[in-house]
Picture 1 (cartoon, rainbow over the protein chains, first blue to last red):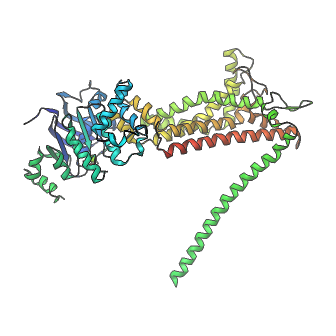
Picture 2 (cartoon, each protein chain N blue to C red; picture 1 turned 90 degrees about the horizontal axis):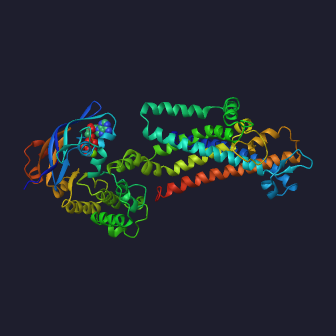
Picture 3 (cartoon, rainbow over the protein chains, first blue to last red; picture 1 turned 180 degrees about the vertical axis):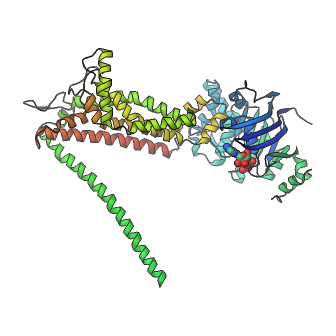
Length: 253
Length: 302
Ligand SMILES: Nc1ncnc2c1ncn2[C@@H]1O[C@H](COP(=O)(O)OP(=O)(O)OP(=O)(O)O)[C@@H](O)[C@H]1O
Ligand SMILES: [Mg+2]
């Protein structure tokens, strides 16, 4: 059963200055599905991810060609405000990056900016988001403590909770477990599985098992090109292209 | 055999180097210690003539009258007022310029602005004082129709010009040290640039900025040449910012030449130096404390 795509890229090229990091990327990201992006280091996975919420705008001298449609609208049209896009497309980074503020204030940072003021709404939001990110039980008594005192795995779940507090439609995750131990990793993988009920998730990973475990679709990238894109099951058991198979089986090189 | 000899010679060399450094370090500490000792030896005798409270809070500084009065209240007030007013000018300008330079300005403008600030830092204070005397003073006098342009306001503006480079460049370092990750996290949550600067970058750099402010103020309170030239020199409690004052450093510099060696006036000036020393020390300790405290808790729960 195919869902409606929530994000579509059409013939996207991306440049850092004169260097072309992405070439002719065309793909659909389906609603309420997990799509994994895999490929060797430097192939452009993070670049593509950051393209989808206009985070690349923050880097000088970058250029985008082609279209990135979010709910049918090209987010690179001149009249689109990247701030609005980023409110609806959340992001979790490779390295946990909580603010040097209390746990509570980490979560309420963005909602407050968005105009939520009442204490009850904020409290409820903090509880909901932390529960969704499976962190509530561990931190419910220390909400006032600095987020910097949490463990790496807890920090990453806090970052997920922080992104969820904005109730985004899409969650972009760039190697969210690469800095974590197996237990924290397993927790976050479970979390991804639950979150896809209500969110669309796009996840970059270097861990093949992870991609196979959590995603419905997988795209394999190499040197800035989308080599193969399809159902995860097919990519991992019977890929069409030899390069994909070599990469997945670890014979790449 | 050969190896053994080289090991021994290396050891000798290392010991030698270590000791040379130790001697230099010791030398500067001893020098500082001697200066402090001398300061106290020359300053403390005044308290045989006047009590500590009368000295610190006495409202009259008439060291050459008969009988003389050694109350440095007006001098302390002069220093404090000038320092506060100059901070009111220098802190917003210094911090805002740091924010502009580090977070907003395009790269080329940034370089230009940094160069200008460094130039300002390099201006000898006597040049600034000169500027205050010949240009700012007459202008103030005319504009506000006052008796003299050599007053608190003039001194504060000039001291602010001296403190701005310190505050700005140290604040800029603090802002620059804020990890890019924090800013990215903020933008990714849909915060605007303004929101990110005020609520994430600025707060994360707050300890460094506070240190910068305090060190800038310490510089203003100890600065001598400028206040000597443009504060007007009246050793009386001021009534408004257009009154002349005589801050502590100006008093010491102006009167030391005339004070008879070893006399009460001489000791009183040294005692004023002790007070100044403690104030500056306190500023530096507070700056140290703030920067350490925030460092430990990772900027804690701002
Ligand atoms: N800010 C930048 N400026 C210039 N070139 C960049 C920048 N960021 C990335 N690149 C280049 O773009 C290419 C793709 O980088 P990207 O970070 O998207 O790779 P990646 O697939 O995420 O790699 P990894 O798995 O190591 O994270 C690389 O060749 C990289 O050197
Ligand atoms: Mg990457």
